[in-house]
Length: 589
Image (cartoon, rainbow, N blue to C red):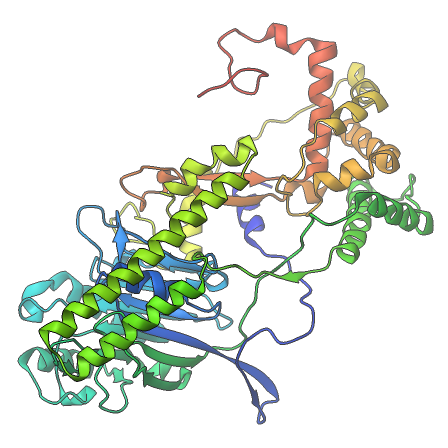
């Protein structure tokens, strides 16, 4: 299998056995179909670049909630205060300040990517691959209020038009949250302005729907001005997904009110993982021994060498994973909020919201000054607990490896793989197209394969390379808490059962060398795509690198071969002095 094939094989996710029980917070029984449908809540708000509004509302997001944001608070165009349960998507601009963002739950974010073709600083489009084949399109649009809409950002209108044409042609549901800064009776404003007419013409042109219900103001400032300017727009394919739309009437830390939308997009996925910190490896070893006693390893199996290798590796892998899954069941991931909330912070927040409510009802200069003071108190409390939390985190961390990661945690400049720029100047529009172009760039097809032949003098070399001594030495070099390959066999399993698996693994390794073959499981790699830091253009595939995670059993065999090359062949002495990679006590940095 080529490296390109390994990349796509690694993209396939293995099905996990989810424990029974409710996975969503709000659940509705569909009596007609007999299925359970899960509501996903969408929040829409303009944060007006206010730090306390961003710090509060984004951190208070629940694990199943999605947020469409206009004018977020960002530092170096990075959205701040995003909790671990969510992932923020924002336009990739460095010179101009971004004015839109979309925040998705981490489970949904893994299946989502930004469509760069339809994105600039005022509009962002993110496509999520849900349980349906077509997926769903999220969009956040900010229409600046300086002049007429056509004079502000013609590129944003062009991208919006092309986005709607694309979603309508593919029948992809589109949900867009927009700050229109315009008035029209279509969305229940008290008047119609020229700006509102232009927006209404765009909506009618592409046969879109405005989901606003009622005439509750979405914008209310302390000077008494109230209006409906925040709108939610959908296309025909998204009509059935909207179950409710309402404006939160409580005062907010922004002049814009929070809009809550409930969607029915199918089963709501929840993150599960196996925690290996509490597993007792001595008991694990005993269970593996019992399993092998019931079903012993067969050293003589009928079939071709390749078939025998596949059967033997699959047998070892199944025994290890079966016992591991029984001793380490799946558990739901619970992420804590980034802000260590306390009663003092909650008290100052309530005071600020109460004062804002009074100021809106009867706006005076004195009440506005009191509101500014209350918001300052709330901001100081947030800064205080933020600093204290960071001090506690640093004081509790004693490991050198964790301390070395602090600069990366403070300066997280990693970018996410989105759309890539093709040689013809266009951008990729689907996940498959993006991965195909990335694989073709990093792993171009090469029909020339080197054929390895073994001479008669090398027939018995496997006895010298694979020995009990080299096996024990190689086992000791395996490091814990390393990412496993697609077979999910961890180094901790091999180290715990080293003496039990010694004879079966040596038998497999020798047969691999003798027949110059590898088990099929070892040929499948898991490709992890990482962005190179401080790159100017992340639409270029060369701005990313691919790390291949292979089987740890295969790595154990490679370590045994390396021991033979160093001890018997003396490869260290034969290498040039200018060789720095893959050598002990040498570095290429």
